[in-house]
Image 1 (spheres, helix red, strand yellow):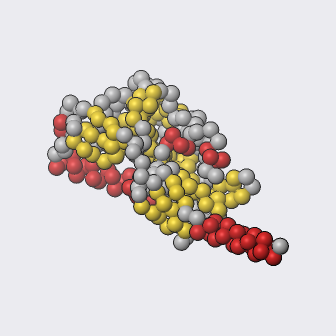
Image 2: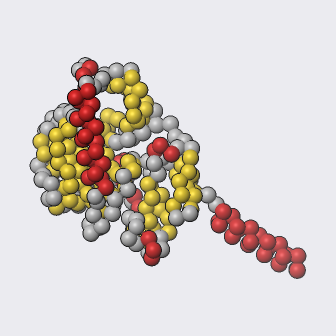
Length: 261
């Protein structure tokens, strides 16, 4: 009897040790939920799932087969093959940029990065996102990108092909923090949904919102177009959490929050 109790105690200790030392794993571009404390309330996007509070942590694409640390907790990011995407752009000046276009694109990238850093903590995100446009997915998140057979940065957005003029709606409530006409993105919108959750919309034929405008979920914000560097009309939709580009298809799936546990 004493040996049975001793063995049970050892198994219990081993079980505790397993959970203490168990490592977390996740796929690049996904979000992982970690139990939150009171100290996390002003630092992270916090959600309630099954009556418990969790902080949402994005897993950077570029950290594949590597790890990140969140408040001392290690999170391993898996290696994943997303496939590849090859496109041809007839206008070579849009592929191999002149100094003038290169300088313009660089300046615009700084404007976009500044906007992504200025998210609000007064907006409370609704994580029940809806699809921003009806169309056909033409290029998914994470694909290796080749333009005119030249390797380029991976495609960390979702491309949805649709007819010119198809309406684009906001997938969630938020505030418009940037509107512009950019070299790569064409007519472009960034929406702040709060606490580091931000989305952007590229290549629009028309923009129907203004900077600093508060918008509701499902509100029309623009129309599909082919402005900027494109091969045809589509929406290039990017979703960020804490400036990390995450997979948009994940956040629009049914029961997204519950799927994180």
